[in-house]
Amino acid sequence: MRSIFHIDMDAFFVSVEELYDPSLKGKPVVVGGKGTERGVVSAASYAARKFGVHSAMPLRTAAKLCPQAIFVDGHRDRYELYSKKVREVLETFTPKFEMASIDEAYLDMTGTERLHGPPLAAAHKLHEAIRAATGLNNSIGCSTARLVSKVASDQAKPNGVLWIPPGQEAAFLAPLDIRKIPGVGKVSERHLADIGIYKVGDLARLDDRFLTERFGKLGLALAGKAKGFDTGAWFEKEMAAGDDPKSISHEHTFHVDTADQALLESTLAHLSEKAGRRLREHRLHARTVQIKFRYSDFSTFTRAQSLDHATLLDTEIFRTARDLFLRNWEGRKPIRLIGVHVSGFAEAEGQLDLLDGGKSERLKKVFHAADALRDKFGDGSVNLAGALKGRFRERVHDALTKKPE
Ligand SMILES: [Mg+2]
Image (cartoon, rainbow, N blue to C red; front, side, top):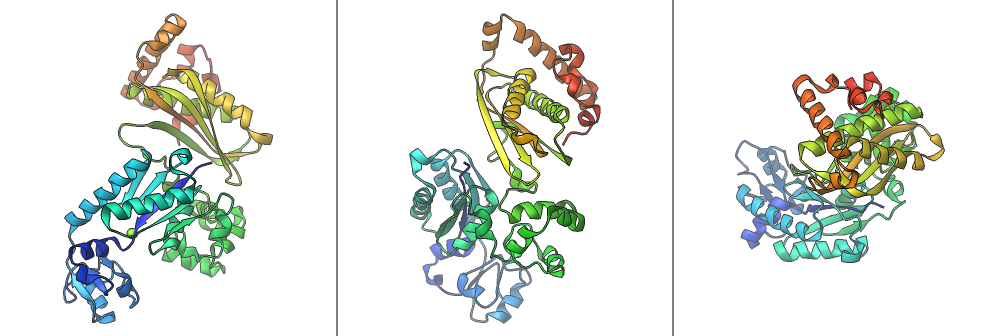
């Protein structure tokens, strides 16, 4: 079960300014410049927000709405300093985290229970640690999904912690206004109001097909989000995928959900090949192969298997991924998305060869040669079927090879 935290600093810019000038505390404060200047509000204290002042509003409008507000200049260097302090605390909790902006971050706390305790206990620990390191209030949302945790941290404000237990995601979201869903802006809100949709629960009850017809891809992503799933490009990203990868993953979303085993296997082959190629680019071997698959109803599963040796071979990644998939593909139900993910990296040059008397070494040379050709002539130029005597490439459809993800 995934455990994802979203932490968001409360009124960050204003709170940092208060650290430098404690007399501002509790007062209506507007950061961004003087009330007579052109330009916009970059942040407003909770006391100023009560008058309707919000960020991105012209400073002059803010001055009209709240004449008693104290206007202060912003200090980027101060915010960056405190953002760094927050980051340093996060690092002590898990290596898997990602700053989403200067004052918010996602943490993947999956598997940290022994170290930090259950989600709510861990969140309180984190909340206190950040307060101790920065003197700043913050709010934390915890759940199995990024999106739900983000909404939860917002609901937890100010200075609170909110945990949505597994299975409660949709029920938590249902009574909220649809604007609370990240990605639903004014325009979507208006379109949804046109069909009588105001609450997340209203949206979740709608038929997927209807939403797709009416709003296209966006509608489908919305339907998933309303049910508490991480859908839509950004939310599906792997956590903490930096330059030096801790994991490599490739996914494919089908235009039409499919239960065609040959197509699914060929897609896995294609994705395995891409993963293998990235491993070779980074000169890494992976010890763990994981697959991800999503059914038509958005329910999503991941299954992982550790190999007895680290590998960078497409064939080994594919064999493991296919076995995992076939063992876990429940009722041959149609699949919306499928992905291959490799992790547990080692720079174990040479170790494979000891195991199989040079066979791997020959295969590696074939793969490196193929990679070089692809670099020169593009992705579709090399079909490994010839080199590998069709060990799995025979199932790869041409159309798929030419049109990755
Ligand atoms: Mg914030």
